Amino acid sequence: MLNKIISLGEVSEVSYSPFAEEVPDGKLIAIKLTKTPEGYKFDGLTLVEKNPGGRDSKVFLYKSQKGNFSFSKGPTAKFIDKTSPEKTFKMLLGFFNYPTLKDIHSALKSSESKILSELSKKMEQVDKKENVFLTVMVDGKLPAEIPEILRAFDEKEKAGKGKPTVCFICGNRTANLKLSDVVKFATFDKPGFTPYLSKKDPIRICPACKETLMKARRSIDEKLSFAFFDGRILWIIPGGVSANILKRIVEKISLEKEANESKLRSFARLERRIERALSEERATYDLVVIEKEQQAERIILHSEDVSPTRIREILEESERIENLMKEDGYEINVNFRTINSFFEDAKNLFNALFDAVFSERTFDKKLLIRFLLSKARRDILRDTRYKSAIEAFAIYVYLKRLKTLKGGNHVEPNGFFSKYAEFFDEPWKKAVFLEGVLTEYLLYLQQTKRNSKAFMKKLKGLKLKKQDVEGLLAEIRSKLEAYEGMSKKVEELLEETSRSFIEAGNWRASPEEISFVFVTGMSLGRIFFKGVDESESSEEQE
Image (cartoon, rainbow, N blue to C red; front, side):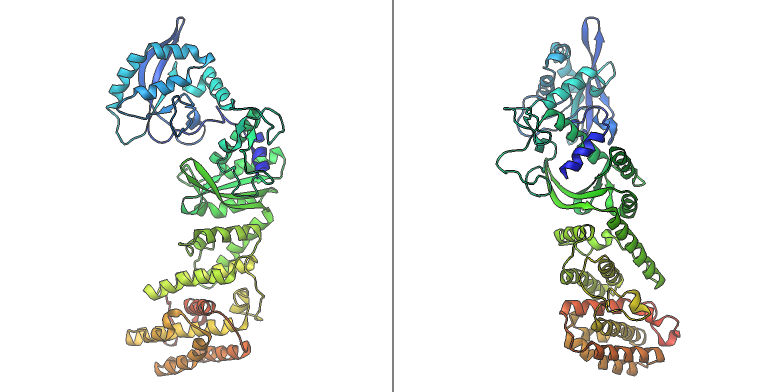
C-alpha cells in the first residue's frame, strides 16, 4: 500500500502547502498588517470567513498541536485561553521568529499592546463554547498567499530532528523525519503497510519524500475518502497504472459526490456509483478502513489489490439479484448498507465479511446465518415484519454467487428453486423452506378467520431443530383442513414438501440453519400463491 501512496503523491497537484491542515469549525480572527516603505504596520483586527473543504481550507496554513508547546507550528493558532489572549498571541509570534519572517515578527512585536487590547475586546463578542483561531493577513492576503510565509512554513515542516539516517523510501542519507507524522498508523498493526521492518525504531524519511507523502495524504483526504459505517473512514487507493491513468482515476473517484456536497461523502449512499466507477478502469485498488481517535489512526481493515473484474462482479450480482427479487414482487436493496444492518453488535465481523467479498476470500457460513437469522427472527416475533427475512435471503444468495460462502449447488430443473439455486444447495432446504411457506399460509388463515395466530406457539420462538420441522408437516395439514384452507395449490405444496423430505434422506443441519431456511419460507410465501383465487390463497403477508 505504501508504494501506491507514494505513486499518488508523485501525480498529485496540491495548491498552497501539502503540509497544511483544514482549520476546524469556529471563528477566525486575523491580525491585519499593511506593507509600507518603512516596513509592516498594524491595521486592526477582522473576522475572516472560512470555506470548508478543498483548496481554500488550507490557505491558513494551520497545523494542529497537542501537549505543551510554546509556539505555533503555523501562522494560524487555536486560542488556548479565551479569557487571556496573550498566550495565544505569544505562540503565534513564535512561528514568525524565523530569519525570513523577521520583518513581520518585528511589526507584531512592536504592536503587541495594541493587538492584545483589541483581541480582548473581540473575544468578549465570541461564544465561549466556540473554537477561535488567530491568524495574520498582509495587504488583504491570507498566509498561504504570502510567498515568504508559505516558504517558511514548508521549510519548518521539512526540517527534521536528530541525526540523519537512511530514508526508508528513497535510500538517501538525509532522513530525520518520521513516517508516522504523515500516516499516523505507520506502525506495525497491519503487515501489508510496512513489511519486514523492526519494531524498535520509528521509520525515518527524508524531506523530499515527506513532501511527496503529504501530497498523497492531501489527495486521499480530499478526493479518495468516504464515510464508512460506524464513524469509520474508507480510503480507496488506486495503483498499478501509469501516471496519466492514475490521475484520471483519482479525479473520477473525486467526482462521485452526494447531492449536498458534504465534506466526507457516504460510501453507503454512493456504493453502486463508486463500484461502477472503479470497475471501468484497469487499476487495482487497496480498500483501507481507518478508525480515528483524536490524533491517532488505526487500520481496521485492509483489502489489497482488489481487481476491477471483482468489483464488476460484485456490482453485477447485486443488480441481478435485485432484479430477480423485483420479478417476484420484492423491492430489496442488495448492498453493504443492508448487510451492515444485520451486524449491529458485531462490526468487526462485518468488516471481515466486507474484506472477504472484495478480496475473494470465504466467510464462515454458519456465522453469517446466525446473524441473518437473529434479526429476521426478532422482527417476525416482535411485529410480524418479514422485510429482514427477505433481505437475509437475498444477501445469502448474493454471497453464495460471489463464492464468499462455501457449498455446492443442488439445482432444480426449473422454476423458483433453480432461480435461487445458490440458496437451495442441499435437498433438505427445499423441504424446510416449503414448510415455512405453508406455515405462513396457515397463520394467514388463522388471522383472517379467528383474529389469532395460535400456530405460532408451535414454532418454539423460531428456534427449530430437525425433529421439530419433520413433525410439523402433519400438524400443518391437519390445521389447514380444519380452517378449510385446502386447495389444489396447497395440496401440491404439501405433496412436494413431503417428497422433498424423503429425497433429503438422513440429512443434518444446525438449528440456526434450519430456522433460517424456515423463516425465509415464511417471508417469501406469497410467491407460491400468485394467481390463486383470493378465497383460497394467502394475500400479502408483510
